[in-house]
Length: 70
Image (spheres, rainbow, N blue to C red):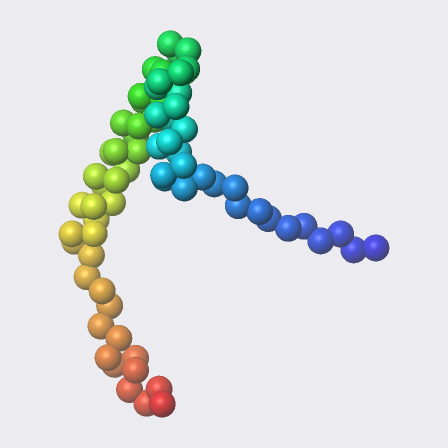
C-alpha cells in the first residue's frame, strides 16, 4: 500500500491577515492588541522592502531567448 502525501497551503492572504489583525485590535485582549500591532508594523516593513526591491528590478531581456522559438 502506497501512502500519498499531499501539501495544502493554508497561508492567509495579506488581506485576510490584515482583517484578522484589525479584529484583534478592536476586540482582542491587551496582549493580543500588542501582538497584532507588532505584526501590522512587520507587514508594513515587508511591503516597504518589496517596493524598494521592485524599483531596482529590471526585467530580463528575453528577445535573444525568443529567436528561433517558433
